[in-house]
Image (cartoon, rainbow, N blue to C red; front, side, top):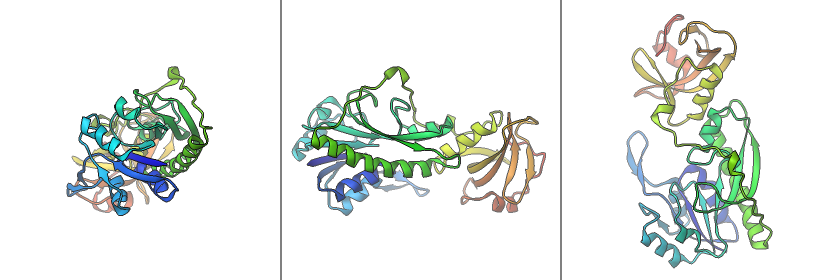
Amino acid sequence: MNIVYMGTSVFAVPSLQSLIASRHQVVGVISQPDRPRGRGKRISPTPVKEIAQQHGIPVYQPAKIKAPEATQQIRLWQPELIVVVSYGQIIPPEILEYPAAGCINVHASLLPRYRGAAPIQRALMEGEKTSGITTMFMDEGLDTGDIILQLDIPVKDEYDHGQLEAILAEKGALLLEETIDQLENGTAPRIPQQHELASYASRIGPEDEKIDWAQPAESIHNQIRALSPAPGAWISIDTYKTKVFKSRVISNDGSGVISQVVEVGSEGFTVQSGKGIIEILEVQRAGKKRMPARDFLRGCKLQPGTLLA
């Protein structure tokens, strides 16, 4: 089967690699335009583009997928199927309706829960104990198409966004293989979504990153792991913006002086939240490297009783 693959982020890489290794032919890849990345803000290819180029697959990077020339390029490739994984733009009807086998998507949630741009991060913020992968037939809505297959994945309390994303990406690639097999065999189901059960996973913004110590310890811990490794939740210590990447809930009960450092220990430092105590285990001060909190404390003489912003 000739396939056009549309994807951009790290999450989309395993599915592309799976298709390349399969009996199918990836005739073209569409990815978002290259953008500045990393501390040096150098223009870098998207993760999906890097893989495609390694395998000699042509790559097309339109600024807007709704532009007429984007549809023309897809028609030149003549795909029988389009696979979309973490692409980042809404696909117009003229592309959705072109391939004979349809346009299918691999989404990192158990739809209809967590439709939208940040399903993994929002699920972690909500403290979900189960996440998963959905493959679906795409329509003009935002993740509203008929479900093909789903796979549940348990979420451990210590998983951060990077860890859970990697697990879901690998499982998504396997589910995509099974989905395409069923499409070819004519056995792929079409299960309409229960739209009344839907929730929306909006894109992460600056308003999501600042830690509010008045929140319960469990909520703060979930925020920290949802934003790790990027963009990172943050606090202010000695007026310096300090990102927090790893934490542990010490207690879910009790209250004290909110934002007060309770103890400075061998692994990190504990802070009183609105409900319970949380231990900070890994941080990064602005302009410095990410490091264990115990190393950070050697250069920052944080004392019990200090109030954090």
